[in-house]
Length: 256
View 1 (cartoon, rainbow, N blue to C red):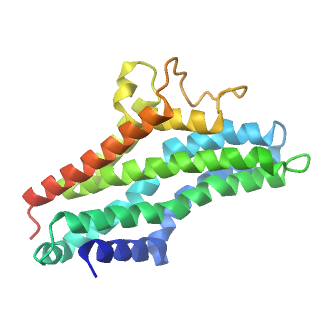
View 2: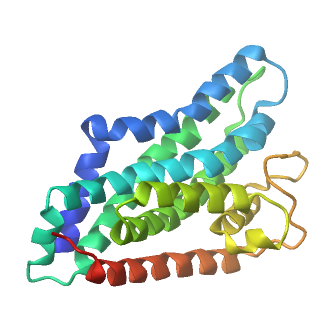
View 3: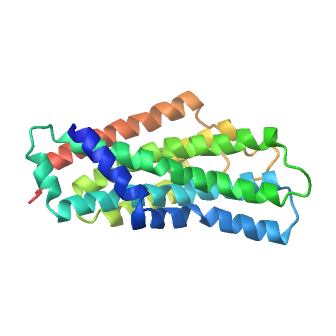
């Protein structure tokens, strides 16, 4: 088995089984808890509530923390136990374990993000005043999940870079993913152009039609949003750049 496949399988096994799944699953169920409260209180249109509250919450809160929980504990475990040093001394390029970790963390994040996306929709549909029209819900839920999947690709790559670069990766991840990502990315002004969150919001708007007839205060207005193609190109570029820089950082970091 190659180093890429070995780290991919190891990451999937550690993050999707046992206690390793609990932190990210707890975060993913937060929107469902809020959906239960909304449904219990009644009032409003369930689909509008989903787009107005659940979608921004998944993008700004669930996504960064799931990416951190799926990536950073594995890197910390490998470095602390000396396993990374063993992997780096094997006849394989140093980028291979990092690429396998990235693939495993990304794939492990997808089912958790599906829970975060689909479960609150099911809750709101179940408490809807009339029969749910799946033709209305399916494109919206699919658009939210597709946006989170693209975001998971970017955020896990950022976490791999931070984990390979620093022993205090959790602090840097909070600053980069939460402050620079969710906070700065939601502020009006030119500074948010530097945040990948702006391009994820653009995808969310394009793929769900959010903001068209439904006021979403959690997402700032964007008079000149980037296109889907431009957003995907920028996010793919950030991902590739982070993976390249993680390889460079791993070459310089003391692994013993």
